[in-house]
Image 1: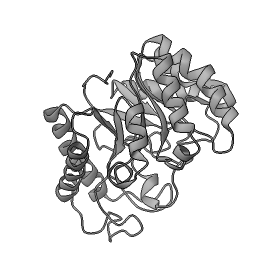
Image 2: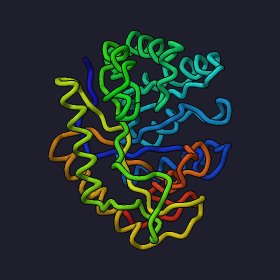
Image 3: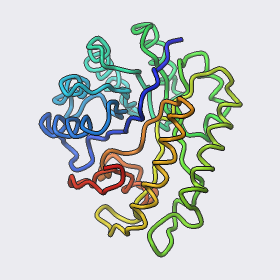
Length: 283
């Protein structure tokens, strides 16, 4: 099976961080900024604006490697098929694609056969390019549907976050009862559970991160939030380098749109605010 070669950690990128309709210029600016700090990025969409913006093409022009995500549109299989043909296939041919991700935290798409269908198609079309799907650690550890995917994936893409209460925050707008050290220990324990369950399989951490604050977009940033994010990420990066684990930090920018709004923490994982200001975490 092809695998993603180890290198310094990459970062996740959502082009909807400041607008619902990013232009090619917006994405080019974003990816040029990303390239100044990271050599690799993981994306969630292969295009924006109904096909106006070809993310893979823009990334190639920025000399940025991608773990390219195929977004799965529930109830609109024709949209997914169009994105695959028009944007994923040409992107892989350009030579800067580290791997292809079919879906993200969407196990219900297994039952509809969409994830298996495109995993098979990717492996057939690009036999030398790793293909996988990005799901939660809980899915890989306890969901029986994971067994259906194992023969189809070249790597196990897993999003791992420290265990905390996603719905409440402390007085500093930080996760309650967890420090960067205990969060890091939680992260490592989860990774090793997955490694133990899937011996010999290539495991890619497709997301991990630490929220700098809690609340709607634009909420006040407490200094302790920046400090905690920096501490946690430094620990994770050092661990990934020592263990030779391929890892993507979440997130390049604070998300505004295209974000899971179930927890106010989810708006604040960026290295840069949604308006373009670096937070001083890793840079």
